[in-house]
Every structure is written in C-alpha cells, then in structure tokens.
Amino acid sequence: MKKLEEYVRSIPDFPEEGIIFRDVTSVLQDAEGLHLAIDTMQDLIKDLEYDVVVGPESRGFIFGTPIAYNNRKPFVLIRKKGKLPCETVEISYELEYGKATIEMHKDSIKPGQKILIVDDLIATGGTTEAMIKLVESLGGEVVGVVVLMELAGLKGRERIRNYRLDAAICYPGK
Image (cartoon, rainbow, N blue to C red):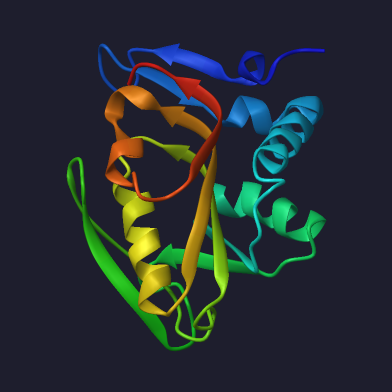
C-alpha cells in the first residue's frame, strides 16, 4: 500500500520560482488516496471530543464533511463573504498578497460547543487563525485543528500555538 505522501503531486516552481506546490487534487482523484487521507485525518483526532466539525470553502468541505458524517457530527461551512443566505458573522484578515473576509451563519455554533476545524492545508496560519476567531466570536471552543498537509517552513503552527494542530503530512519547507 502506498503512503499518503505518495499520492500528493509536487510541482516545482509553481506559482513562482522556488516554490514547491503540493497538489491536493492528485489525492482526491485517486480512490485509495482519498480513502487514506480521510482515514489518516480521522485517526489523528480519534481521542478528541468535539460536537461540531467546521470547514472552510472549498477544500475544508471536501475533508470535513466525510469526517463529520463518519462520526455523526454536524458540519458547519465557513465561506467567502457574500455566499451565505442568512445572518452571518464575519472576519477580515491579511493574506500574503491582500485581504480576505470569511463568514459563517450566526446560528451555526452554539455557546460552549466544542469545535473541530478541518482543512486541507496550513501554511502561514492566517486563515486558520481567522477561523478560530470566528468560531470563538460565537462562543464555540476550538478543541482542535486537523489538516491534510502542513507546510512547516511557513510557521502556521506557531501562529496558532495555543491550539491543538494535527497534520497527516508535514513538509519541512514552504
């Protein structure tokens, strides 16, 4: 059986020279790779008690929904601004080249609920930190973050050091 890392296609010099792009689509388009990714992420958090799974658009949906389904938990969407139809809470944050705003339905998290955040990647940690703040603004308690890949060289783990972070694959560089 192949290791999870073997399903990730690495593309040198994309989007710019010196960067190695870790392509999640190669995991998704292989049935065994997708199965292994979900199983590995679930195994990392098997000791974690949580009430709700939260995932960001769009790859957080891909990995978060099956984890929620398999563990009989609700799944809550975090979307880009303007995509949700009901009353929302939002947060703006800095990206490497600009700003972004994400939001979630105001009634999606109840005070005191324990939240697991699921995403495909943590790099600088900016998006993850924004999601944590958004959840906490509704009274949720983030008990863990699980990702398929961590780019350790970008130090996202340090940015959210007060939270549990599990990564199925950890790449030392950027």
